[in-house]
Length: 204
Image 1 (cartoon, rainbow, N blue to C red):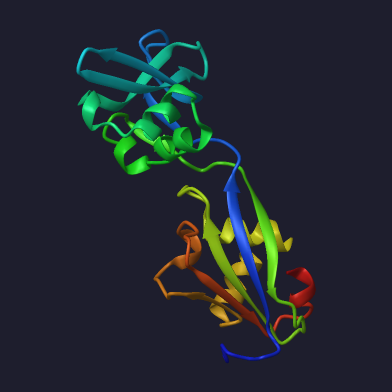
Image 2 (image 1 turned 180 degrees about the vertical axis):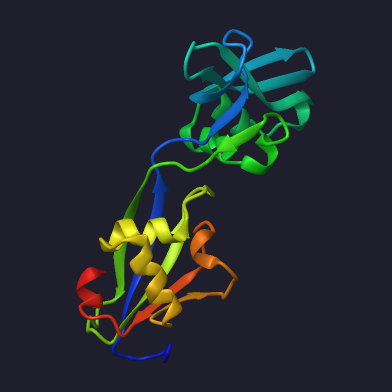
């Protein structure tokens, strides 16, 4: 399949999660493992020369609190003033940066449910729209477990099985190439190349 046709339409898809991942941990009140929901607020404890910062969560069933450690016994003198103000203001971007640091969070919980709802903001890079092909450039605002086949199914209005058939017949390519790409999460920097599909430019 050609990958450099001048007749192809190019789009940028900005994938924006609508909520934070949900850590799963033992809830002392419920007595079993439960999902916890981010409050999107920090708790700060500063004592003389050191500071502790937590991101607070609530059990999805009983509302019991859990404090996820962000900073522990850090010297106040080493903390950037702008970062400190972000914690004080419960700056949403700072909250989400910590909430979506799933790799670090997994060391504090049983597991993390990062399969969140999302929206896609689409913009045309090159508007030469024809049915020859489409190149989609992905940008994921925060790293989360949005499967590539789920993303394409939702945005293109077809089933995952159709997406799989396109991939198997080389009408859909994922670059850089990766084994089992459709079942893996969408990542910033990926390009999706679609061609030989009737009405593909209109779908995109």
